[in-house]
Every structure is written in structure tokens, then in C-alpha cells.
Length: 146
Image (cartoon, helix red, strand yellow):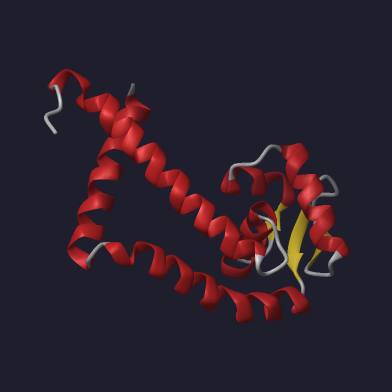
């Protein structure tokens, strides 16, 4: 199939969008098997790997609005996976802290989740993965600069 070079950017956009959708669908399905939704998992994963976080800052790190973060934190708190802790130095600041139950859950499920991601990307060899990473970073930085 010959592609008109004028349409190459459009073709790339379509292929990238479809690949991203297929990958996201598989990852979302994996996350749901743990009884979590993707935003709950993202917040738990952040706290698991990075430690206590200001609730006001979580949204920036997992790309959610502040209203959505409050809702997700409430849900995770009801599941006893995280708790809120007031900052002793500034009453306006509240931290989200992963609980022992949350850490135990992530200790169990994160290796499985990592394995699912590895399986999804097993269609590429290591060299191809490095090349895709490099090219997507280049494209992302260019797009940010526009």
C-alpha cells in the first residue's frame, strides 16, 4: 500500500491512536481484575512507589482534576487502602498515605500488573522498545514546543 507523503502525519496519528487505545484497554482490563479502577490504581501506585503525597499535588502527578482526586481518595480511604494525614506545619495541607493494607495489596498485585504490561509489549524486542521510546519522546517534546 502506497501512502501519499502528504498524508503520512495523518496516518501516523491514526496508527498511534489505535495502538494507544488497544494498549490502554488491555491495561484497564488488567487493573479491573484487582477490584480497582484506573484512577484508584494510579493513586495507589504513586503512593506505593513515591511515599506520602500532598492530596493537592496528586492530580498533577496522575493527570486528574482536583475534584476527581478528592473522590478517588475518598473511595480508597473507604477501602482502607489509604488515609489522610494532616500536615503538622500547615493546616491547609493534607497528605495521602498508603496504609498497611494498601501496601500489602500493591505488594501482591504490582508484580502481576508489571507482568501484564511486559506481555502487552512483548510484540517488540528490546531494541525496538528503545527506539519507540526515543521517537515518542522526540515527538512529545516537539509537540510541547508548538
